[in-house]
Image (cartoon, rainbow, N blue to C red; front, side, top):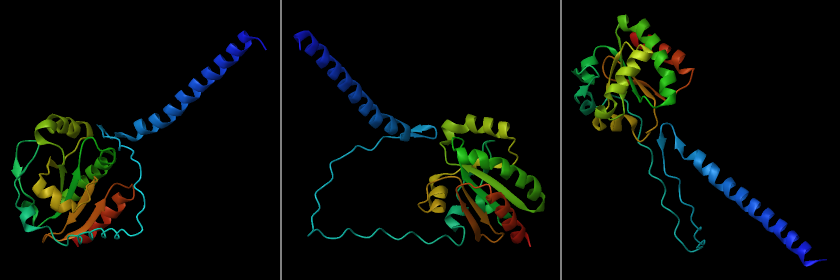
Length: 216
């Protein structure tokens, strides 16, 4: 075999190796780029680390702390926190005592929240005149999201009160479950009758039944 033939063969192998290397790199990079995208936000990708060697004599890890019990009542401290709505008005959750209240924790960037809002608009039209007060509390920054919320209300024709949830309200209600949307149905005397985590098409029917029962 001639020297020229050997050079060509090596060039082919080298080129094929480079191609395989690039493909392998893309196979690692692309999934990381995909999972790093989170509804409206870019979140950092976890850095891979070499696993620590197993130590058979090491003490067992401490058990995770138990989840707090579900709230049975709207905390008094939460009910009196001053809240602000998009029209510049002030209110507090205690204003709705004597009525059945639906508190919705949400955000404009949240996809499931956007699918849920039209269902709440329908329920408001059906139940508001019967003594049900629906309140949407955005978890977004009031200063940065005011215009966005006003446009959202116009686009979705939201006819119930929309405001913001400060930490003094959002944190106690969420109880460590930071995902949104979350809905709380509050009785006339401040008891939490039902809590919905996330969004499901079935929630609309379930929420309607909870409201009917609360009004009896």
